[in-house]
Length: 361
Image (spheres, rainbow, N blue to C red):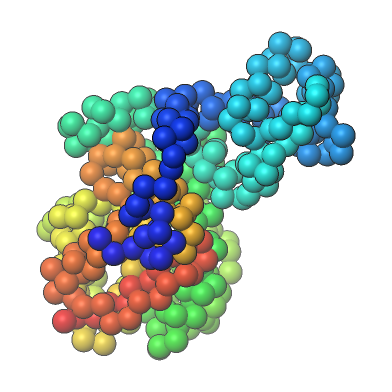
């Protein structure tokens, strides 16, 4: 297995002492509790008050400032102390470096909301999902085959966290991605799995001539139309309704570029090959296919690889039961099986994205 340097250093040799390994084992067993405690340390404002206080705060002072009982403040602080997000000196507590990141790292904020609102209850059914190959945890929200069918019907706070997560990871890569896609003449672009139209809007704002067709489920296209209505350039965005899981569903033709951003990770390898094979059939020799994904093996920082491999289990338990955040070698193999070849690879975009530029073999 090929890995970027920071990952290879971390994952190919044992680096923990026995005591450190034992500590990690206990952190894992109490992980769900630590997660909820840490979420409430943020929600109740405890970490913010600790960071704002130069001298630190006592349990009673935390309770008073946050409107909690002394008992509630005490159990949260003591749990956080042993988890490592706060420190204590005498009877005064302060936030640690980890506490600072928990409160201020935008990725940590997005991931925490996503895991609490979208994943937490459904993860109870992870075992069932792995054994059955179906998103068994999705039943906490509704009776759909995949989460994408029910996105528009999820509770508002769940929708907010889902889209907040999805948009954060994609939006930070858009500026650089636009330069790559429009480096060649692109007047007609097919946005596959275009969701709410955020990328399409970026495209029509970046290039005054391009026309974008979003290929997605009918209910997603309705959501897209509501999100883009009245916005500048929206008249150059249209929709092509299809179920991409239908192996007989053909791609429309005559596009300069086909764009798939954070899309193929929503499908199993066999489904990815089916989608790419149909995309290849619609392509001319000059058509370029751009696949933008956060491949876990191509991350500059190890913490990113950690997050991405955990996100894979969201797909298992809630999204569809059979997809994941891919290793780049697996995706390239799917590309080649579909009759395409990778012409160029762009790494390090935004929040760790990679773009594979593909053409017909």
